[in-house]
Length: 468
Ligand SMILES: *Cc1c(COP(=O)(O)O)cnc(C)c1O
Image (cartoon, rainbow, N blue to C red):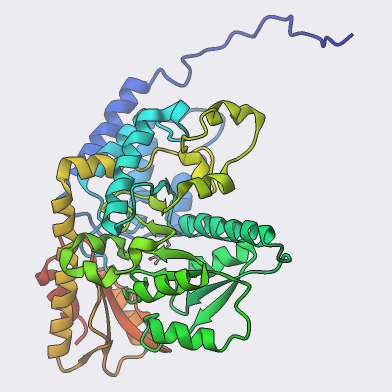
């Protein structure tokens, strides 16, 4: 007998409303808070928190029984919210800041309220259409062909990883077709590549062929010098260039990297997680020459495309290659793979279930227009140039290099690591700015990154004045 015992007892009474009775009250409470937050003229820097008071405030918050929503929200507002640094403050100049438009933040709420996923055409055609329209804007900025396509992933790190998996497997396939033996493969990367690249190489089991740079920029000479030292390049399968290094905002010679990739038959990946938006500005576009021929590129909307966390665009020249590598095979997924020509976002990176996170950018691009984005990016470039000018004029400063984009590296003559640290601590304490130092060729240096459209030259002067 193949039958199993069926559930022939009555289901216990279930209170379906249990988690919903307070919904109207909750909606009002949260929307009121959100409305207030969105109406702040300037997001405070925050980031000051005390672990001990948080522990006390949160004690017993989650147990078997429900708690009053207002009281829980108050714990967040009074004890948690202020401890989170606002990367979207116009006075946040550390790491890579953020500056999501209100349009993108609000539409992100729509995505949440409607619980929109963006996995496949079957499940989410409208979301896929919208995300693809936004991806097309980015692909156009890079000058990629009409067949380019991709998906939004959680961040540049996830994007770089997913792209390198495709680079590796495409190379493996080609090698196996050519009858070459299996081998550990290598990828050409600059010594300034983002840490996520070496992390990704480690995960995918490839090694870096590191190109040492003189001034932080991977150019033709640097690439050729590094390759000339190698006896055998037959295990090299890709080159990764950076369009806007995170530390210094330097754009590699993408044209040289592109030609190198073409000459050797390598995959060409560009990490433009931070710097990609610079391509919108006509005066800057020529610095990116060569990017048109990428096999894959990553640009983070949550950085310079003014969208909320967490969002990175991963775009391929030939997304069908990515599909052949990343598609997950499971019987319950067969229904979404019925149409061979369809490219499902889920099949283009290492993920399956995914939030339609690209729709926030889509909505904001539409309601603001691309020209507003171009102007906002140009504003950051101008601010960086302004800061560099000031630094060159003030005797106790030294500019390390003219900024390519919106990162300014400089030296406060006479300062050591602990001086920069004390400066950073004091500015955070007084909520004047959030700044952190960085390293440049072994030295601790000052670093300011501009990204927020509301940052002013006055704010720049204010920060520089604190370094006397
Ligand atoms: C920020 C950044 C990354 C990592 O992106 P996440 O979104 O933080 O994962 C990778 N590469 C570059 C050049 C970056 O600036």
